[in-house]
Image 1: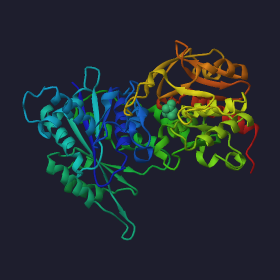
Image 2 (image 1 turned 120 degrees about the vertical axis):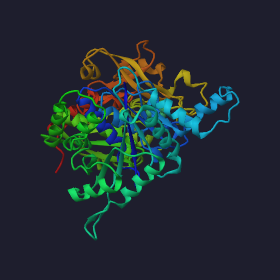
Image 3 (image 1 turned 180 degrees about the vertical axis):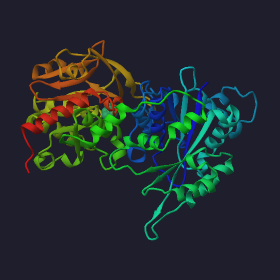
Image 4 (image 1 turned 90 degrees about the horizontal axis):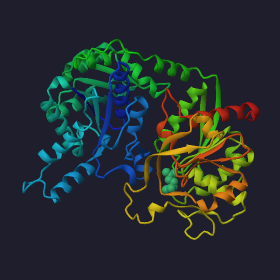
Length: 539
Ligand code: GLN
């Protein structure tokens, strides 16, 4: 029978509930259990797909094509769970489902209410992930306890514990212990209040995980346990990590969180093995080389906007035993002026995905700089579009070449709308989304990286390479090294006679794992390391 863990957060937002949920998943998997993870977001948007990266950070795409919260990225990176569209529900999506059924007449004249109809829908969403093959479902409740908008979710998980029996449900509450420098003290009061608020709702947490910048001693632990009514051994410290977020599972394991959870659910699955994870941390701690890679993006000021890309670089660093230093550059700043000043000395250049006019010229120029200076280049989605436009303008001499996304009446539309997109008017959930197969050209950089003939990668776009130009590009020295199996869509391009110039239509960053770096990121970093050896950066 499936067991359930609910993760709530108190005191402040951004405590890292997503990371902690992922870390719990990693711990349970290390004992051979099968987990699935899920996030509830209390906002009204049906999904984050239409939200600005400044509001929401990265939109994470699942294999089955759901546009989701970036915490799902943590879940997939920390575990082997393959998440799907049932793994992220917002208030908007829950209400949408209920209202659709109401309009259909499914409630047979009843008054439709938050309790029980919305809470029942939330409970169904949790239950949907359970199954014979899943030992534990971990559901994270977004937002902070005490928020008005989280209430229906908290009420639903309270009821869920009542329905399933407390021995089958575990409530984990993540809180902050602020440190007051002036008095040199760790304060527990906000945590007491937060747990008090949870108790008012009827939820008694089984486990408290306390975020703190200072170590907490036995006295603080005892005090928290007493005032919050949890066992002392159920109070865990999650101190700020100095090396990497991937240390979190090991920190919690050292304090016995996995043992406590296994005991609560009366699981008896043996000692647990985290050797691979420990080796990965060792590799992170002891790199034998360093490489500097430029990332030229539109939302560069906000690290959450390119979360999965930055994580993929960490993984690729581990795979190459190298530290990857990132030079984050606002693409717009590359629109004019001397590129040497901004990009000089880097060993690799990555242009990530994006939308719209702003920054596109800078991305195009960055791709041109990498091509002509023979610097390893990796383009992702809009980054591929930028590389194609640059090649058209400067190699094929199609001076007016562009994407119809930004220039409706260009005389050389080398990037155009996908056929299926012409009828689309709604913005939400209507891009080409999720995993599609891609066949690789034998001998290409892509085929070498993957070591296989067919791959599946996740997409999120409306525009594509315009096939009318394929011959012309090939004659000019571009290689189409990845195509959809029907050959109709260009998925990967490369530039001939270049040390490593690869750009893909899909988002490889969503499939990279700390213990299994994505092959393209791994080889891009490897090529950048080779560049460093050949052309050391000026001192
Ligand atoms: N704006 C481009 C498109 O819609 C690229 C999207 C992306 O980079 N994710 O096709």
